[in-house]
Amino acid sequence: MSRLAKKPIIIPAKTEVTLSGDTVKVKGPLGELTRTFPHVAEVKIEGSEMTVSLRDDHRDHKPMLGTVVAHIKNMVAGVNTLFEKKLFIEGVGYKADAQGSKLNMSLGYSHPVNLDIPEGLTVKTEKGSMIISGINKELVGAFSAKVRSYREPEPYKGKGIRYSDEVIRRKQGKKTS
Image: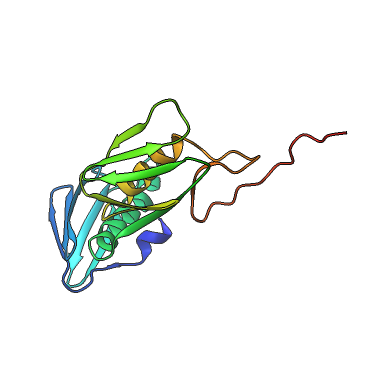
């Protein structure tokens, strides 16, 4: 059994969790998230606690239990506090600007990079940085990875888009004799 599934999930005040079949719906002060899980796990709500257990002891189902619990915990946390990813933009002429539901970036290419911001996410841009936030952890991480993939940081000068907690190992350039 998963270590995560051994502990119950605490449902905070002002948060509603409803079950209908294999679909879990979490509603909180910041929004609402819905997710359908495989028929592997059985979710039960008792008061302000939620427990997740296996429906059967099939060996292919056991690894999914921890995944289901982690997704539910992230849903409960997301509707109460926003998930954030901070990205730094480094390089001469590299910049980003969020206008409405569009993200316009100038990353040293011959053309600007324009992205549609997914619904449910907000992007704030400042000089040299951008903050991507939302209630869905998976969506925040996927969009920030997509933004970073347009110009990954390079090891010689450190130019590119990197996460705030990412450390770039710098390489020494060519030596002159």
